[in-house]
Amino acid sequence: MSTPQAWWKVLGLALGLPSLILGVFFGLYYLVTSEIIGWTTLLVVMLLVIGNTLFLMVRYGLVGKNRQ
Image 1 (spheres, rainbow, N blue to C red):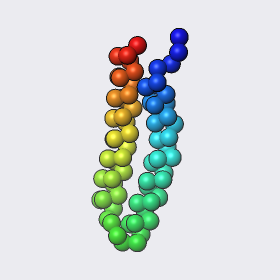
Image 2 (tube, rainbow, N blue to C red):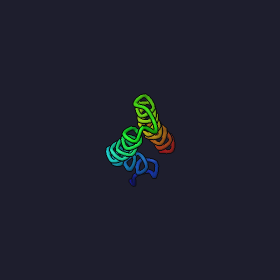
Image 3 (tube, rainbow, N blue to C red):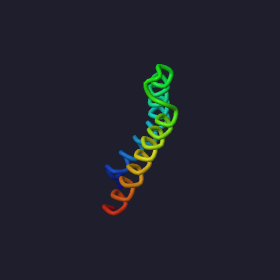
């Protein structure tokens, strides 16, 4: 019994989530300190990035579950 390809995608997203959060935060924090964007924009973009990643994890998980 082998692991479906979709589960490897979910695992990759789950392992990459902490570095994604840190990378996006520090990139956006630089833009906030440079006064290019505001704190509200930072928060909205962070929530969108995290929400999109979690959505992809659930989507790939359900696709992998249906193919088994």
